[in-house]
Length: 282
Ligand SMILES: C[S@@+](CC[C@H](N)C(=O)[O-])C[C@H]1O[C@@H](n2cnc3c(N)ncnc32)[C@H](O)[C@@H]1O
Image (cartoon, rainbow, N blue to C red; front, side):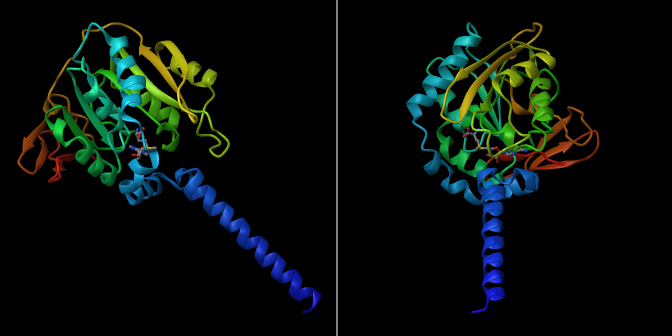
């Protein structure tokens, strides 16, 4: 073998290795986020039926570290209306349903139809108290100041603009309402998508939040709490029909039809899947 052949082989090998590392980073380490929202959702759709097995959450811990502290912070209210953005397979709704004091309702929102399919299965016994909405975290189909609690766990870093998504979560929270998000600690592989605890607390403050607090939680995530400045009466349990807003014309006049929803303002139609997932997307 000539010297030039060897050099070419080495170069090709190095190029392939580099491509492999790039593909691993783009698709696995950063879960497609640098390739756009469609890629993120496509990957979650693809792996939805394996998600719970991989995460293997201990249900007792979820109740202890998520539901119990949420209920402690909103007491004496027992029936908060909760929006869990990027709910995945229903982790937060399930933790809430296992909490004995919780008497409220949860709306689980996610853009991945397949993750929501798993969520419906995981919570079928609680179907009276949970609604599932397929929509993007960046454009939530709800008016301002709608929820007593808004949560978003392990997901902000997978959105195209985490800061804008955070503002959207705060928009739908009522004054005095409680926010719980997660802040990724392992930031090595996601430049520009993650914050330090100091940065996320400063961001909350800039966006009208008070009582910011970051807490140790899991290996990869901190829990970050905040309360929306101001005061308002607790919302309590409300039906989806009373709070949905048309994402096309931004009017709150969606009427329920057998096959979904119709906006009386702009005529837009939204589909209701056979398993009960409301697809409220433009
Ligand atoms: C790591 S999972 C977290 C799921 C759940 N919160 C949990 O803690 O198990 C991230 C979720 O974010 C959802 N997601 C990613 N980008 C989204 C977006 N732009 N809008 C709505 N959901 C999104 C994915 O479909 C996925 O279900």
